[in-house]
Length: 283
Length: 302
Image 1 (cartoon, rainbow over the protein chains, first blue to last red):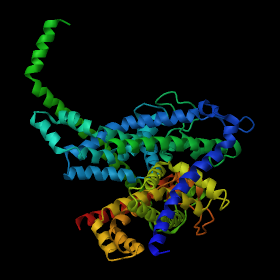
Image 2 (image 1 turned 180 degrees about the vertical axis):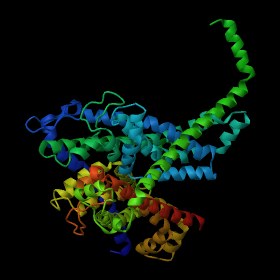
Image 3 (image 1 turned 90 degrees about the vertical axis):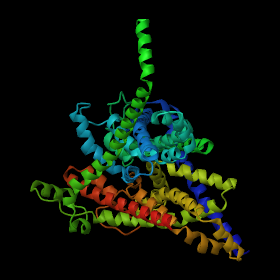
Image 4 (image 1 turned 180 degrees about the horizontal axis):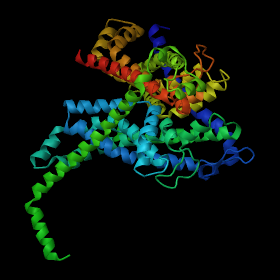
């Protein structure tokens, strides 16, 4: 066998690692959640009751699924205006100026801040502020967690949409300006229709990030295993219940946490695949 | 409403139409600018909070001593002194965890990246690329859960450095694969073709042409991947747990700076230490970010 073939086999062999890791993940999660699935079946998905007390154990994930979706959707709704504005500043209004540079550097810094530090800032700075303006008694809950989460996903939402907005051909914009369009009309009628699918995809990917965020949410959501009743209600997300209860869990309890992990894995994989598909297909 | 009034208003709008449109445009710009300023001011708020609250705790012993126990911290708080001790166990733990994770992830990541670049059009390579993208999106807590099942339960029979490193390596791998492939794409194909035309063996084409000519891109990707996992807390909670002393044994639990921050946060006596630890972690992450940017910028000039 010549050395070229050996090199090719080594390259190919390394690529198998990705298959092994991904396949192994799915296998271990499914295997680990079987004990819980045998006891609770599909009811696991629709039961809001989560009771780890020995002898009276009952596990259902609905409260956490609802908490996760509620927090992440709220975060996305807050993040979109912030991210869209930042993208427009960087990629359109101040394109290639020092100010665009400053803004995009700041957004990069935001991406570099660890989750646990966002949590601390939310706990010691944002939470007292929310209490002081009377929005909530303790300051914990979906609202606080969602706000911090929104800030955390802005970099993910902007990084892609910036380059997509920049890619809109100048000829199109100039044509619109020559017909007397204002800046707003150019953004609304030229840039947006051209960049829509790319921007949508980047927001979907940011949403996927929000679903799996753990530390900051755990520190701010109040960790109550209940169905959230409103924006200022406390709750728990799938990621934060795993972080909170993993240490003392065993048996069916542990298996239920693994099943939540499996759910989270599947949901984020679908969301990410959708985002990437849109990028590939339309952008 | 009276129809004559409506007509009058319509006429008014028509005469001032451009005024209204340009006003709308300017109003929109103000709103956009406001939102962007809110976003960047949050960055300054967070970093400012860390600096103001954290700097006075940072001294020599902060880097040379292990974290204090609750009692020492309580005594110091009671007498109004600075809490003794530092985060040495966290710093050494983080270095060990990230170092071992890099040793695992960097070679595999670069080799797989090269494979994807070399076989870009193959269907199988496309599948690998897609799966790698999906891996990148897996929440860190789920990675921790899986590595717990793989390493903590089956291999080290307990929380360990190895488990934490494997978790971090799994998170670094897709980032390095992607950045390797992207920076290889920047290399002019003529370079590679020239080497092949000279009859260079394939492995030498990779080692002497592809890797050296994309080297700064590779380094940038690795540094970004390291900075991304440096602050990870959730997977470490499930895999290495923490340790109150310095440990170099790969089969034993170890602490890390983000784990210490979490521990200090949960202990009312230690609260004063969270800011300095966070400041240190943040500074470390920023340094790597700036370094990678600097290398990337140098590359683009050449």
